[in-house]
Amino acid sequence: MKSSKFWIAVVVAGVAMNVVDFVFQGMLFSKMIYVKFPQLFNMSPSNMPYYIVGDFITVLVFAWVYDKVYASFGGGAKGGMMAGMYAGILANFPMWIFAHLSINGFPYWVSWAFIIYGIVWYNIAGTIVGAMYKKGEAA
View 1 (tube, rainbow, N blue to C red):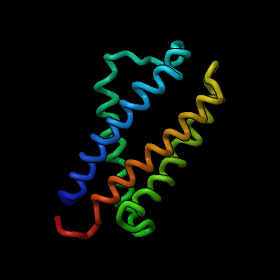
View 2 (cartoon, helix red, strand yellow):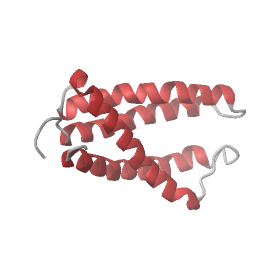
View 3 (tube, rainbow, N blue to C red):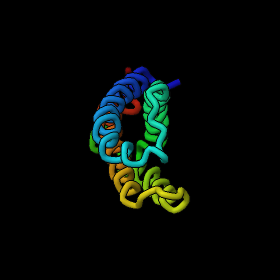
View 4 (cartoon, rainbow, N blue to C red):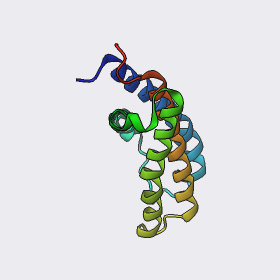
């Protein structure tokens, strides 16, 4: 069973990442990308609960992996940020390049916008998780 520090880090990072997504996905990308390509994206308000829960699940999975590779990156904000950088590149670079290659009409520049945003997203999440969760410390 994970310590209470682990779960607190997941909740705090999950809330923070939902705020980040609201600003970037809900405000910036909605005007910059989603409105321009409505045939590609289903941004229905009825999907909002799934996006919110999805951020918490993503942070939970990231924190779980970070817990497993903690020794490679170390604790603290810096270690979490580095783990986030690796996770962000691993998760986003191939996914969005292949989206461009396999989905008709998916613009190449949108792939890069999502790659950069995804890497930044994981860096922020990693920094928060790393700063709050120090493996082996008493809760």
